[in-house]
Length: 353
Image (cartoon, rainbow, N blue to C red):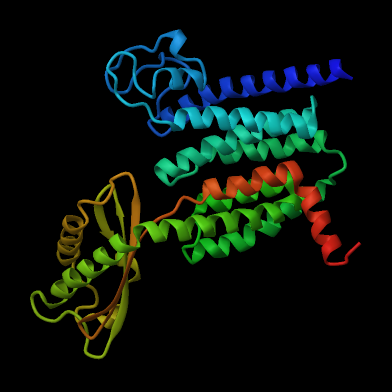
């Protein structure tokens, strides 16, 4: 009995170490993919001084700890996220082994977890989910036809359909992005009915993250909203009144890399004296708001919504866009491991056998 326990412990440690090593490679993928750099060629190097990283400094998790989170050569700080990704990958591999043991479903699970980690980090950095990650998950869905014979073929398509429709509706109202819809459809194809608890958990995690994010940035967002109200009010009255008397309209725009872009396609022509503001007037508005928000982080994206009526600003709402990929990935990972158990628990709770 003791021998079996030692064997299991050693295997678990080796699985974790293997996962951490793969996590080190995932860091390369996460960093280089948005920059369109090769993930194969080119040695790892310090992003501050360009010095090639020595092999002894590439040991997952421990190298960052021993170096104190700094480059050995220039002492520039190294983000803790690299170590977090390595540890997270190690734990995800371990979770897959404990759930499925050494089997084909375990292989599918660890590949799935790697893709979720990569797309989550890239989504946090760029607010975009790489298309190749979604395609890869769909391909994994085809692999589950062979690794999960108890799941009928129609359940794969049902899972994709049942989740794609509500998420597409959310995307239409600005609650999700197109990448989130594609991700959930691909995962629905892979997980079947297990996509339902994944969606519920993901949306709850996203809501909690959104509330937390709003609490942190509410003071800043209110201040910028008030400033945009003043700038837009002045713009309305420049060169005479722009809106038809007793008319109202909603103006929306986005701010990316510190540059404002007002969406001119949704302007209600009936609300404006000359049909729509001219390109010159819109450019003037874009420049004014861009100067106003010059201090916001350039690596984040923001959206704003202005309600105007009779040449007067009624309401302005400014907020930061949220990456939902990480929240959805939490739900997807949990459902991949324990989705069937969650569904059974819920059906028993509802008295459905």
